[in-house]
Image (cartoon, rainbow, N blue to C red; front, side, top):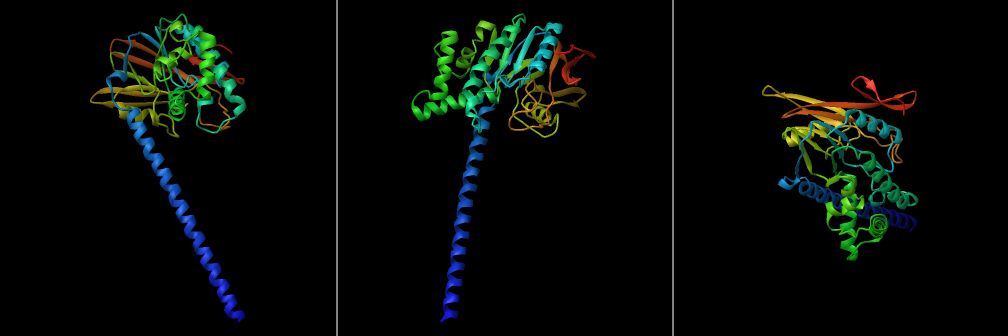
Length: 330
């Protein structure tokens, strides 16, 4: 009897174990299917976002251009940003391009975030972006190209409209902030127009173009865009962007500096990763492979020359190096 009971229990235990394994396999399969659907949805989204369209092409004419990107206010590095602005003052460009991720849009992020920072980050990002635009008031032409961080705003607003039939709490808080500071009533479904008005860009001489738009300089031979590729190695994302666009380009997004050069049919082309001006120790990574810097472009008709300006540390302080000279201690 004991042998039968023991055998029964062993059999019962084995069956339970097998049922548990089956349930885990089913759960794993469901999770894998959900992840696959998310990846497919993301691919479709990216295909639509970065699809070729004439209205995404922006053209500008200038002889001297400074390109700044990935400042991520209010998580910028103030000393590094000040170094870049000193070079702007020295170069006296015809055009400044803010090439995406200028504000972090922390409150609108889908990633896990500190709720204590969210509301204050919106106010601080708004205030500091306005201060930056005021600091650039002397530049004749000013363009703000959206990046994936600016696009957080659009995704959150549209999602909240979908769920609530109107602006949810994040959008409502920002609406109130913008109304109090600018007097504007925003059409939140107007992606470019609402973001321009959030930061009062027209009053500061800035024109805003949403993420995935491309700015053409040097009679169309050089493209400035925030970019969509990321690689662990410098210049690899720039290379992929060149292969995507088929033109020389300057991209942000990676927070790295790097140069890719290629000669095709006797003509030289290049692709440059622009570096960043944000803090180098974000809350989600204490040692990222990032480099601070920006680019200065000189243009003569269809020809151009890109100079990357690295920001190095001198006695612990950031210093911009341009033309072999430094912009001075911060």
